[in-house]
Amino acid sequence: MNDVSSDTRTVVIEREFSHAPDKLWRALTQPHLIEEWLMKNDFSPVVGHRFNLRGEWGGVLDCEVLVIEPNKTLSYTWDFAHEDAAFNLKSVVTFTLIPTRAGTHLRMEQSGFQPNQKQALGGAKHGWQQFISKLEQVLERS
Amino acid sequence: MPKVHDILFRTLADPTRRALFERLCQEGEQTVGALTARAGVSQPAVSKHLAALKQAGLVRDRHEGRETRYAAQLSALAPLMDWTKQMTGFWEKRFDALEDLLKRMDQ
Image (cartoon, rainbow over all chains, first blue to last red; front, side):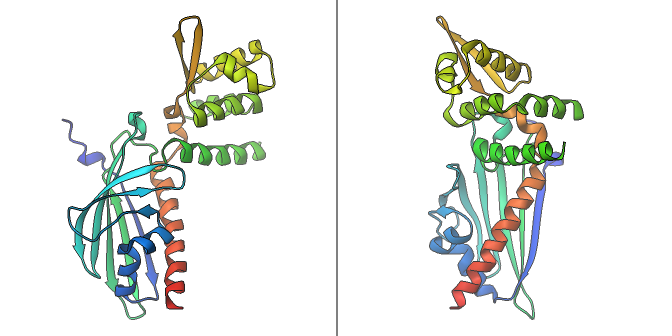
């Protein structure tokens, strides 16, 4: 097997929320709340629990809970299987909650993409829709 | 790299061709006949568009008996996608939704 670690890509998003960590934790770990901001799911806050995130575009992500530290750290795998290797994705999503005076600093890190990974999340349809809107922008400009 | 983009954009700039490609993306593999039935243009015209799509790597064909079946090659679009940028956009939007949710949870 090739060592892909040097090609691992990472996406980091950070944001300050004026809400306490325990409230943010609920939004990140209760299925009906997760559905409201992320995707439909059968999440359970138990290490080793396997679940799916179901996107509006019909794509299904395979996930497994890796870390549960209430009000502090939540980590799970975020894999997308696709017959076309260019769309395959194996990654890990980690949320870190840091209490601040005003509320919570939330950091989301997603990492572990294959070196040939160009596009993955929504699979075909999602990518296509984004592509079309991009294409339309280009066509309007030209 | 710009050259690859040029070919893809030029190939998909034609609305009829783009509609054919979109149908293959959404509905999966199809014969020229099935595509023609709903394309609004003649079969030779459809075949010509499919040949252009094939040349750009956007579709592949497969012969089955006397019929040729076409399928979209989504990986051809990969050069147009910057994964990291796309994923960042996804999470920014999700965080916006999370912020809205947290406000609602107060009520």
